[in-house]
Length: 316
Image (cartoon, rainbow, N blue to C red; front, side, top):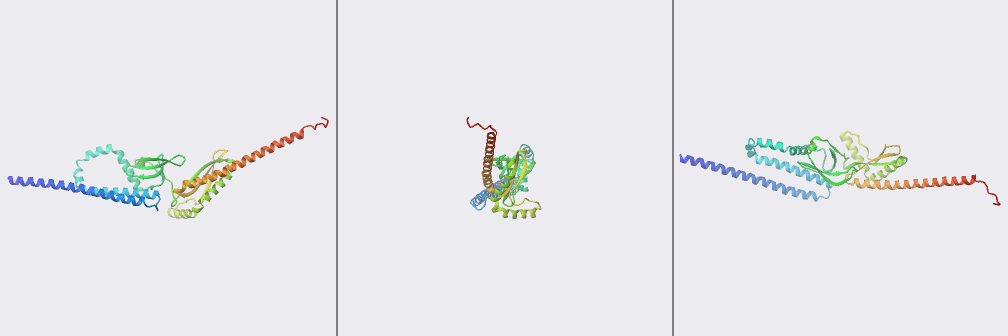
């Protein structure tokens, strides 16, 4: 009898030891995989960052995609390694899990929003997007939030980085600036005096076409490809300007042109510099013409006054 009890005690101890060694091995394996993934991520990050042939947006997109992919793979491996322990804990943690769900519903909403974005891919890193009242360039997205380089009301980057919860993506649509290949459409709005509107329209369009002439052929090729692929009508590659009357004295000119995203601001500034230089010259000519007309009127009035005055006698 004592011998049988001894055997039972030995078996229990053996099971405890085997269970303990199994947990230790699983911990070691999980830690090893994590270290390998971190090492691979570090090497890949160094390779991508040193690749000067790619644009900043392309490098950032590659890093974000690789990081998220590694995260998913590690999560799958973690579940596979700890599957036995997880199954044994499912029944005991059901109540705790329910409490956690209530407390962490915001985190779950953020997680689901990130998953939805990554699966549906409504935009990519570097795109200009608008979600709810947030506008900016998409810098990064992870499982809990996404980052935007904010754009002000004047459509200029203001240097602020917004970190927005992914839960916003579940209940709001995403507006994305469309691209034609690598070229992005830009719209410039300018207010001009109604008297100068027709002349300013032609000059602004001419200046824009001069600054975008070198890429018009490539943009037109991309436009034709997009039209055939998506069966949509896309504006042609030429810079075009349109009128929008505001009131009897003011007209808004809207100029649309294509440029590579990274050169858009530079080209926009060059167009504005040339346009305002021309406008200042026109204003100067107008003032000179008005001054000359005023002088001619004064001279005419003076001559009329002299002609109508009585002729003085010679003796006086």
